[in-house]
Length: 145
Image (tube, rainbow, N blue to C red; front, side, top):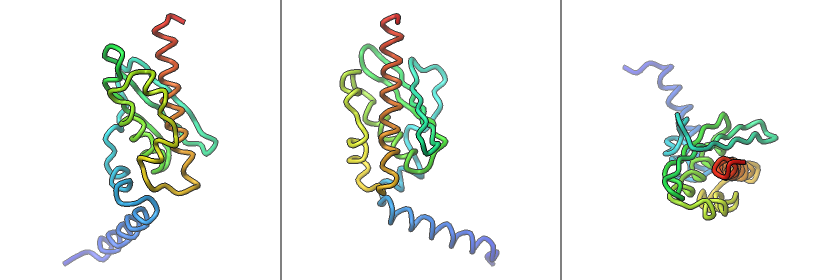
């Protein structure tokens, strides 16, 4: 016999999941529930960090192998849109050169996500800014500046 509280919690969770799919689409909701690149990297070659006016902080960590980004990960204390945007930024950056990764902008992240509410689109630009900050820090570090 099922506990009434467990049944109520399952029903609430289902309503939340349905609302997320309506708002973000199935693929983005799945990415939010299981991001591939969410991790605080122990010894990154570089890290970039931004905090938006909304209060969300995004950190992007990068490792390089030669002139290519070999690993990318992120940490955010932000909302679901910050999570999925950061995840896409890392996915797009991995395997790219600094020049190629420097071209990754918020609009490209939004395009990959496919469906993101208008009031959450700034999160994609925050993720892009954190990536650009990491790349800038790497360039400064590698040039000895």
